[in-house]
Image (tube, rainbow, N blue to C red; front, side, top):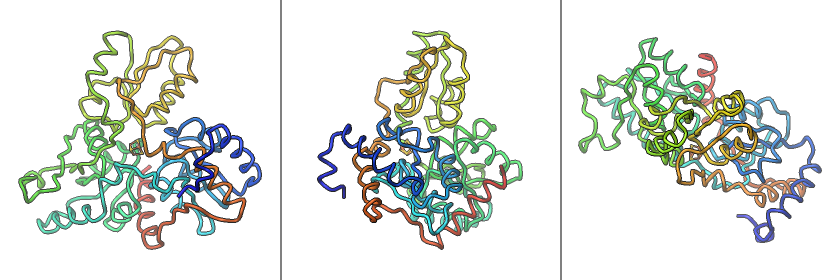
Length: 354
Ligand code: SF4
């Protein structure tokens, strides 16, 4: 729990103190910041990027402490790829990812045992989006499966399908359906209550991709109407979306890709071009600021903020840093050794495919 003395600080004061604490800790720490973090926090990040880039940076780092300004599954991944001597810290330990939480390990195992009862488990390879718990990654690792990211989902799915495999994809239904569409496959939504009128045996037997019914509540807010409205106002507009958006929205977009892809496209775009972006608002606002020569809009009127990413505040970042200067570790995220070993198998298979 964040101590009261930190809660009482204004952002301005916390920011000043973070600069002091960070200087004091020097190269003992590395601060990683996800694109969706707020600016007051992100200004202190030594590296900024998406979850895969940040975990690669964590793996390369020799810092004693990795401060992960992101959400829980990202800190878990960082812990798995760093040495046992390094500690990973999440400034707010409650900063989870609602989509990752939609695939609890117990339900994933139950679904898999449903397939086993039908004699079909061996027909499927489990693939989990990196936005999932370490337990789900470990489950995939144990079952011969893979991790993928939004940047490489197409490559992973395409290679497996071309090898004659069928896929059970966790936890994001939209990443699997949108990616499946790009390789000409309609994913079949896995119904949790299969016994109560969900998928039948024949539907499972004919599915090439089974999609777990999870989604990102932030990206699910975008609608086709939002795109139509923008196109009406700016006929020359290009719409670019993250693959976590609903299928109908993805179908109406001109381009679809990971946060890094979106950033690259906007940076490379010509001056005067007009863009509508379907991803988290902090990233879009930053792109607007960095690209004054282009017209950039977030698609939609609803505020597409990731509230759990936003739990990382200057106050709790300051708390974990000052605790380190006092010799205390707060909010360490640590994955057990057996989970780590199996989860890394699934991650390594992804790297082998790349
Ligand atoms: S934006 Fe969506 S997928 Fe990303 S951390 Fe937030 S809830 Fe999870």
